[in-house]
Length: 513
Image (cartoon, rainbow, N blue to C red; front, side, top):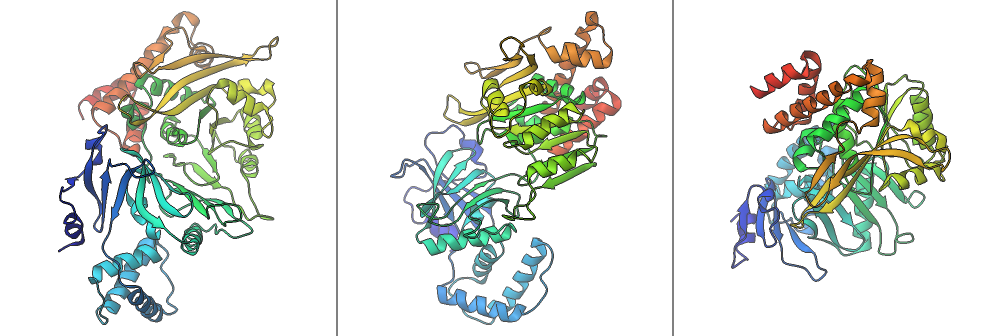
C-alpha cells in the first residue's frame, strides 16, 4: 500500500481527488486532495480548527526512524568525504541521490529506499519541513509566528492552518538558522532580523531569538514564481482592465514616472513586474532591490541588490540608486522606496531619468505625506515629477475570495501655490459594486493631452488620435487574452511584434494565431 492509499484509508468519507484546486474556487464546503509532487499531496478541508482556520494537511511518505536517519547521515558524510560540491542545486541533488542509492542498498531501514532519499534531500538540500509549502504553487505566503502550527495564505482557499507543527525552540531556531544559511544572509544574535531570498526566489523575513520575539524565532515567506505574472494574466484576474493596461503601455512608451502603491500583500511587485513588458525594448534598465524579486525581459538590464553586513561593507538602496545615476539608465526600477533613497529617486526624475517603484500608501494624500515627511523628505515642489500614482489593494469579492484590484490611477499635475496641496486627476477609478475599473473618458487625461501630445507634436484639435490609439492597444491586449497568451515572455514577444509591424497589423496576426 502506498503512503497516499494508507492516508486515505483513515477516512470513512473519502476526500475528492482533484487535479486543480481552482475548480473549488468560491466553495464554502470542500474536502479534497491534490498532488504537488511525486511524494507530496495536499488535503484541504473547510472544517474549521479551534482557532477558526480551515485545514491544510501535508501528506508525505513516512520518515525513517531517528536512529536510521543518524546512520544514513553518518555513512553519507563518510562516503562524500572531501568531494567538491557541484555548483548548482540540481547537480547537488543528482550527486546526493547517487550516493544515497549506494548507501541504502547496504543497510536495512523501516521504510522504502525512495522515501528515505526523499526526506534526506528535502532536509539537507532544500527547505526541510517547509519544502512541501514552497513547492505548492497555490500558496502565496507562509508564516511561522513562533512555536506551534505553521500558517499559509492559499490562492484559492485563503488563510489556512497547516498540519505542520513546531513544538520546541531548538527545532525552530535550527530551522531558522538552516534556512538563513541557504540565503547567504545567515541570522545571528548580532543580526537577528534579515530580509533575504530563498533559492527558489521566494522572499523571506527572519526574526531570530526569543529575546526579541516573545513566542520564539519567526519567519514569513512571500512566494514568487520564476516566470512573472504577465499583464494579460492580471487582466484575466481583473486586477487591471485592458484599457488601463493600454494606458500604462502608452505612458511607459513616453518615459513617464510611475509608482505602484498599496498596502502589504496588495500585489504591488507583481504589477510592477508585469508592466515592465511595456517599457521599450531598446532602453537600458537598472533594477535596485533589497531582495531580488523583479524580472525584466530586456537584454540591457542591470540588476543590483543591497548587501547587509551590519557594519562596514553594507550597501543600501540609497548607495545603489546614487550609483545608478552614473550608469546612464533610461529607466530605474526601485523594489520599494521607504527611506532617503526616495529623495534620490526624485532627483533622478528631475535630471531626466524615468523611475518606477513600489510604495506603501493607500491613497494620494498618504503618498504625498510619506514622501514629504521623515525620513524620505522629498521637497513638495518636486512631487510633480511623479506623473502617475497607481493604487492597488487586496479585498474580498462577494463569494469571499481574495482578489486584488487597482482602485485608482491618479495623474499628478502640480502643487497648488496657494493651498500647497497636490493637484491631480483620477484618470481611472474602481466601482466595487460592478467590480469594474472605469476610465474617466476622452478629454479627461492631463498626461495624454499635455505630455504625450506635445512630445509627439500632435495639435490639440487632433487629440482624438491618441484616444483612438489607446483603444487600439486595449483591443490588442483583449485579443491576446482571448487567445490565452498568458506566459510572460510570450506576451513580451507579442508586444515586440506590435512595435515592429504596427498594432493594427499585429491585431490581424494575433486573430489568426
